[in-house]
Length: 413
Ligand SMILES: Cc1cc2nc3c(=O)[nH]c(=O)nc-3n(C[C@H](O)[C@H](O)[C@H](O)COP(=O)(O)OP(=O)(O)OC[C@H]3O[C@@H](n4cnc5c(N)ncnc54)[C@H](O)[C@@H]3O)c2cc1C
Image (cartoon, rainbow, N blue to C red; front, side, top):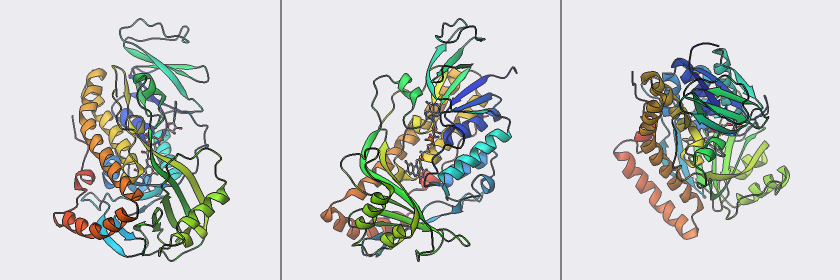
């Protein structure tokens, strides 16, 4: 055992892996507990790490060229209507002065790259360990149930796991995602994630389809659902895509088989002048459906020794393209606060002050983006008419999302 303070991190996803590296750098001894067994991550679809998230990785000393090597740059977005007419071309972020560019990557590849950066630093990741609860013991003496004879230090926290085990440390980071157990303990009775009225699907073509310039993200308001796609650069040249079918009720497990889901999606886009139906038909991987959810507000983010980061604190709607980047920014900010401020309770307070307002704005932005995807026929006609004008007006003064993309985690030391 070293004399370094010990950080217990519940969740080895994006936030948890980046926090492990950030805390290690800040002089802590992190230990990551991941609920899933090793290799059990669903292969998943893809996500976009925006330029601000890429820059935060760079600030942490992670070379994006390496961490995001399996992805490709996607700095531009073209919006279309259901007839295929281009409504606007918008920046998606980058390249910034330091070379950071918004990058699209398969979820499983991002998890794998971040976790290998964690283990390369000698930080343990314990798989198959689902946190069940925790107890804080502020001043030395503790009476944590289920921890017979465990060593205890003053001002600490004990985590219990569903496997019956437990661990002790001086800090607990709840990075356990949208259904966070740590959040539930900190916020008893608080609101659960809300379904946004949209399903989510994703996939990859198994053969090339004519889908526009490689690396150009395209999104379209189909008549019945929203569709997004991007062609990978050569030599792979597959098309990566997602769809957001509106639906009043959330989907139940087992409601679709992979075949019925694929046919449902093909039918949904059949009447549009878009490559959507053809792309789905050409796909050997059709993923989902997932319910699209976000969390409106989590009242309590921290106590003296416990803190929430990433989706556990604030699930941002997928439409914002910022969930992963917010998780990365949170983790890097937390590391900087703990490095600069000796007292963990004060460091956690500073972390919350630095993150709350930004996250609130980004969540609100994601909700607004998502609501345009469920417009009825009149709303859709208005949107198609107004979109180019609004986009032109907004971009005349520069990038309207610059406040998101140009954010950098502040230096505190
Ligand atoms: C369909 C879809 C598309 C998306 N697209 C984008 C996109 O394009 N761009 C973007 O930025 N974001 C996107 N997001 C959001 C993004 O995936 C999340 O914001 C991001 O993964 C948050 O990282 P996290 O580490 O907080 O949570 P997660 O990545 O979910 O990681 C949480 C981890 O905690 C583990 N865990 C859960 N409970 C416990 C427990 N009790 N104990 C221990 N471990 C536990 C889980 O197994 C998981 O590994 C999308 C989300 C969805 C659903």
